[in-house]
Amino acid sequence: MDTATKFDAIASAPHPVFGYKSFSLGDFSFERDEYFAHIKWTTVKGKPMSHTMDIGNFLRALMRDVGWGFFYGWVNFDSVFGTTNHYSTVDVFAGTYNKNFKDANADLLQNFPSEQVRVTFVDMLEDWTNEGFDPYAAPQETGTPYGRKNGSNLPAVRRVRQLADRCVGLKGDLAMRTDENGYPVNRAFADVPQDAPELHPEPGFEDQVHAFNLFAYLSRSDVIWNPSFTSVVKHSYMCPTTEEHILPVVHGNDRVEWFFQMSDEISWECSDKTTAEPRARVIMKAGDMAAMPADCRHQGFSPKRSMLLVWENGSPQVVYDIQEGRAPVNPVSF
Ligand code: PHB
Ligand code: FE
Image (cartoon, rainbow, N blue to C red):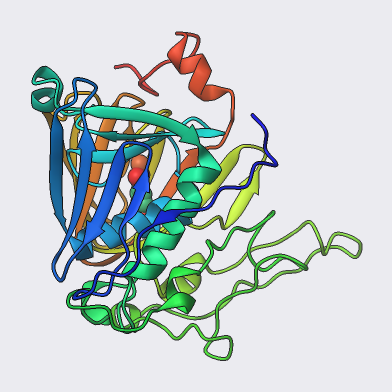
């Protein structure tokens, strides 16, 4: 692929009443009105199809897909629409991983250079997000996504994931969150101790011996369902995150992920990655660990803001090892 290729989003003029632009990407088009996103496509047999999502749910999912660079594997916005990351190209699909759509030949999947999808999704997210609505925030901590176009919220939608090179708090790496740098303790974590571990490295090892208070760090997160890197060792990424309400996407794995529930409770709905058939419900309480196998899709529900450690294997090779049978789909067999 020619990585120097520049892409521009294909957008219409703003709608005369609602004020939002419409976008097109291959044979998909995207429109928003006061309450909904409408996704339209033409099947390979020429049949016109459409799918409607609540605009708040659509923007929360779109924010994650953009912010995570299409993530690992599948980002399902719901049981119909989503993307699959091939790590230089991206599939955009409607109905492809939904048995009923597939059986009715009502689906469409098209593959694009990642950059083409990215610029389209970024422009759509920036145009469709109104002043006062933050798609990364908990529903109780932000305004409404609904209504006619009313300004924008670029500082919120342009937030980047906080990714440590080695470990939070090391010299030259991500700083601890504080009141002073704009991260007050969240209302749900007022009881979380803010102390720090004592460090006594031998002279010369100050850059290698390190510890920090992860609970304190997470208590000051201003976003939900947005794993960041707090420590990185080769391809082992510790990605803790704070969760509240519903994971805005249904993630379909292309590798195994481990979850460690650090506080409170999340329940997970796990389904078949290809058909969306329900498969398991996993209720995780503080201290529980679980692994999501490489052939499932899953969505979490967190009734109260909670802390979750997601452990990712960031190896670019592991996806192909699993696909070709050299690595297992389940991390443990009983
Ligand atoms: C996941 O898909 O595994 C996932 C995504 C975002 C989170 C937590 C888990 O915040
Ligand atoms: Fe996941």
